Image (cartoon, rainbow over all chains, first blue to last red; front, side):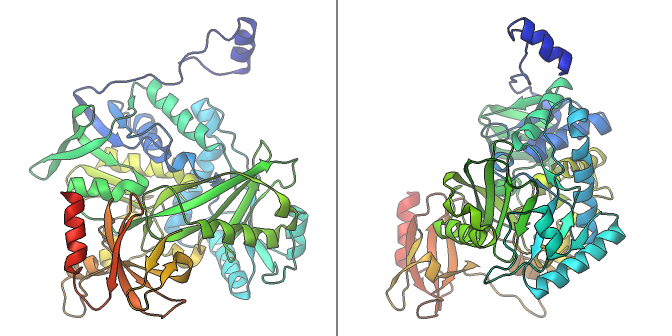
Length: 415
Length: 101
């Protein structure tokens, strides 16, 4: 792999950009791998990367039904934060956030991490109390957040309307080290690094069956033939239930549509991310100037990657109350992703009833921010055969045993 | 927009008039059940790619709960029927049979 650098750009500028090579190799499946990862989104690629980097396991294939990073990795609103209430969540999201800080250098690929800060608005007394509690919990967890006044909110984000008719801003939970990153670049950067380690990334390869032998996974059937493996890791977000069914178990997961949209590009007007959970909307401005807007998830099962139209209206209505200046913005694009929701709105990083088959799913509406931490924890589990400290609390058996990591109450809708 | 016909009042209701209630025909397990049964009842879901039999409430209408059979890949509604049954009625099952045949 050729190193990306300022010198490389200068060199290629002088010779007409003829020396750039493909970021990752095109691969066809081998007969057998040590580890097969299903799903070449952020979480799957990060798992593969840390398997190679941290555990020296490089005979790995990442197989993908569609194209690399074309699922929720390419459909989210790119927010990165770690201001969670519960200890296990704070640990893994903070690990992810801290890895994001140096990920561009680590991967030699510019993921455009922008630690611009995230404001989570408190617009009811109840929410204000909740966020003060989260700020105290974060202080104990070593996550740097604070509860700030409405005046400070206005300083940080001048376009905000503090005294809206329905939901005045009573303060906000502020995480200055939180921010955004270029979502596609995260997938591309990990893919390039994985390919460089000799791993095979196989796109347009759909898994059609999971083979097992005496309760141990032995391989997968795919649209590009049969592939043997010692270990299998399922990292397919919304389609986890479908893969689990092939592997012979059920999941506490339901798949629903979550929508986002972007406006036409405008001049820079906000340099923080604002989340308004009471009114179901969040917004940031991309480097191109588009306002990136996300809203609430649908309430019913759906695999169509299209959400309900009325949710768009609800989201926009809420955001216009909070940001009156966007009322005449035109929306350029709107899209949906299929998110896998668990009962406690926390992810699953777990061994499964099938031996040597592992699963990483249930990130629901908030997976992008967790990608490096999730990959780190999942790689450790796959390499050692059992979850390490970061993943231990996120096991499948927590539902059966009643040990929830209840972020549905803590985080409200925008997770 | 998703439109379901309420089997009680006959209204073809927009989804904004309805509230989703999750998978239908779950077998309720309570005190005395095994851990497996209880976990299955509370948490484990079919989450199918295809026909999903689910519960809805006509919350801004007659207020009653009912069932709907809907395809999660195409959003096609196969039919709706009342809540007081433990499995889909024969016309829904026939429609499902005709689809898979």
